Amino acid sequence: MKTLVTTVWIALLATILCSFNAYGTVAYVANQNKTITVHNMETGEYIDTLVTLANIPQDILYAPNDILYVTNGTTVSMYNPDTGDHLGDLDLHYSGTAMPRMLTIGPDDYLYVGDFNSRTIKQFDLQTNTYVDTFATISTCEKMMFYDGYLYYSDYFSSKVHRLNGTTGAAIDSPITVGSATGFAISDDGYFYVTNNATTLYVYDSSFNLVHTFSDGAFQQAWDIEFGDDGDLYMASWGANNVVRYDPDSDEILYTFDDTYLSSPRAVTFGAYDPLVVVPEPATMILLGLSGLVLAYRKK
Image (cartoon, rainbow, N blue to C red):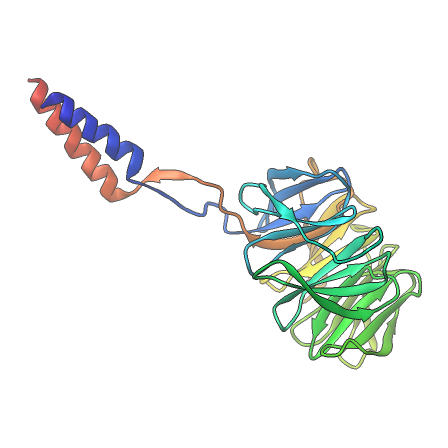
């Protein structure tokens, strides 16, 4: 009987366990030293290094299918955002040497990949991770984003933010000019926040009028900027080796990320981070306690 109770106690301890999300939504940062690091969004503190890549990443995207996509040299690689396991690479459907740079999700739930060498934007089905079509032919692309029926992309060499028809991919115009434009993000109210190869953040209203600039020296060469669900703007500052959190309402930098494990960050994205953290549930603790009492009684 003692052996049976002991076996039951061990089985309960080993199997009646639960995992929980200890971190919630985090920031994933793509770094020049070929690493993807994970950071607490509330404090900027370093949590973990998820994966070390073969090549320098250009962009990173946490997609709705819970896959982390990374433009990694001549490929777009897929990773498990919790474990860092490599899930494979996209077939870019390109006969030459591809150089994928930018990633975004379209209103059709396709993944859009901007390729530097072919000067194209291509569509991929997120359910099957297969090529769908070439959406548009473009100039160079540093950042792209769908908004209000259009696809916008920034072009460092022409110093423009270009606008395409979001359905057909046809070129429309270039409504914003910022010298050596790099990253940009669009707020919920249609304001454009644009960075360049310097230390200034430019803010344009929904009619593309420059309404504000911000520069305090905290960031430099921010190649990627993204709005979080908290409404703040996160800027991956390649030149200043940091990621800064900017509050558009108060017009101030709230904090910079812990830079111990950052290396000229290239891009930032947000998503749930669920490494397996195993703890006994309350019911499990009760069962374990009862089993222990039975075992103690049997030993008498």
